[in-house]
Image 1 (spheres, rainbow, N blue to C red):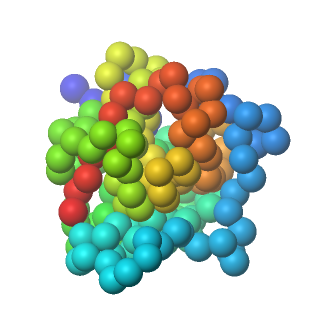
Image 2: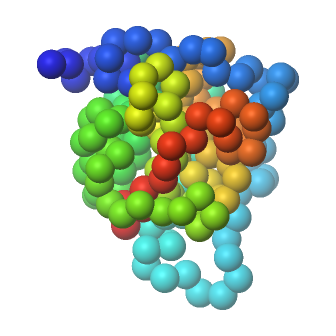
Length: 168
């Protein structure tokens, strides 16, 4: 049984190797480039998804910390727990448990605030991020040590993608 301070994968393992900025990953969003908003009025669920994505973006640059669940340092599932809890939607602590909440979302139907899951250190969901739109997501990877934005379409993330969930 895993303690609450385990790594993102809930195994104590450190997810490796993630792509590094300047390599296959894009640079983080700039402050003047907010989460994309669809035209027309947002449904309450879409508005909540944008709040989730926008809050997650506020933590770009926060260091990775195994077992971290606050702005002093996050692991992947800790970032998700912190953001969703602050916005009144508590979620489980472990990545594998987060993969069971909400409803499944097809990769082609992603929107801001959806959780995106990857198999990195173990079969099944062992890493999680928060979608910003249908291609970008924010997450707390262990390599390079900071919360950052990456693209789902890069080879690494595309080949490790295992699913997505919509919480709201």
